[in-house]
Image 1: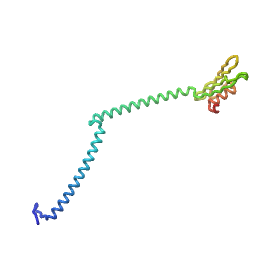
Image 2: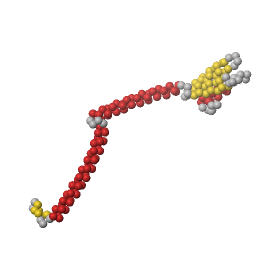
Image 3: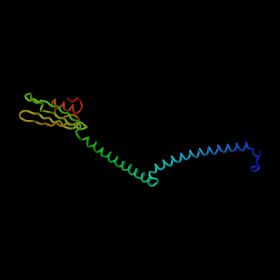
Amino acid sequence: MKSDFIGMYFTVDDFLLTFAIMAGVILLLFIFLIVNMVKIKRLRKRYEAFMTGGNAESLENTLVKRIQQIEELITSERENHENIEKIFEALRCSFQKIGMVKYDAFDEMGGKLSFSLALLDQKNDGFIINAMHSREGCYTYIKEIVDGNSIIVLAEEEKNALDIAMGNVAKE
């Protein structure tokens, strides 16, 4: 059987084959359409989540807020850095090293009421206080320490306190 279709002759088999091919192409296009619809739906959800409210103004406001927060953090970090530098400068002059030795200054006294206390800064500058306790009273002396040394002769207890402060011996 032959039919006339725009000047061409097709058989029924040709028509069925053409129909099957077109149906396959349509089915393939329909699958692509469904896949694209799913992708567009996911993209729309991500877009709406990104816009946080559905308009560009909310995104712009969010970005402006974040930029302001970053600027505040930079300013705060700069201030913190300056404060830390001031603290380190103050620490250089403060007493950081301490050494103390308790002892009995006189044989008749007990209880180790006398002591030598060394206070030094970062550069090992400072002083030693020596307090000697006796029955008549307590006598206190101070000796200046420069770069870990004293121009005045140190007693054994004072030397020990200085060594402890400088980290030359373990504390008792």
